[in-house]
Image (cartoon, rainbow over all chains, first blue to last red):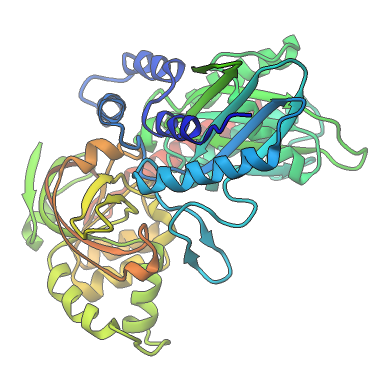
Length: 290
Length: 206
């Protein structure tokens, strides 16, 4: 297998500095919904200027370059040990080149490692062996501000009158959006997992954020709930940055998991407007960046 | 858009109201979680004895912060090898984490403005009335754009806190912000929180 360190470095540069077109398109479309001269509209205008500038100068869209979350789908025979080494050395190099901020802090000794390499858990890398010959590496950078406003509910939740059904799911997701206010850098994107245990539920609520904007769940009733949640969240008037306004949530993605009879978790991962995710595909000799 | 340069007088602060768009210029310092905790424990509550260069940094900060601004920001900085520092990306971090400390820090150092994102709570709002000071909201995530307004990095204290947590002394030119908490008890965050809670209650009843 070829060494992919440089290609992964390029993936990191692109992810940190160039917002995916589907996200940018949604942000551009939302400007018209806000009153001219309002702080909400001003915020969106600044956001769009920043998107252009970051792409042009290869500088981070947001200084919080987040938790690097890699999802690797590899064909039979590829060494995940080597791939992980390459990901880690690309990450250290990306930090040196200021594509990434040093973000790995030892939680017990309070020391920043300075190169974005923590223990085995940082950067986070998920490997999955797949059929076929293509290797894909997806990267998501999820900032701390939006991570902090994520929430997990164990249903029933009496505080919002949420029972163990989709009506209850709707209630807790809306509650999470109201509690987040503008602190997750609204307008946000919601990743929601229903079921699982506490750990798998949170992980899936992030994993679902790898899909494109507007991707709907195959189950029509879940697809309808996704649309409804986005629209009802926007009724709350929190607006960009929490300044007040019509654009609070750009999209909602829901995934259902298996749960134990005793448990009914709903996990909400809030993604900020700086929704950084990019993909690298290795097709034989060819390298494709999305 | 109002133009304001640090150091800022109390009169200028008292004139600012929620919703005012402001372009800030002059010297300011970055400070976030570790810095606020360190300031409170070492110099304000004095539950921790000063260590290393603490007292020296404190004397410098007293001069720089008097009438100036603290910016909740953990930047991306280039030139770490050569010490020819340059801000590459420098948007605001979430301010509410400094809520336990902010009012006391503002009063102690006579800080006239706090820049951050997401707003702060009742304790800080009261601190804004008493100091007086205001909360300036920057656009979260607009890091490359804001970094362009940082014209000079004068230096850094406490780099051992880690690059994002260090105290960066910077000069800015026309850094765009919006006043969302003023020195008269006004808070856009309290208003939006209350109105959105009302809508949520209606939605939950549907």
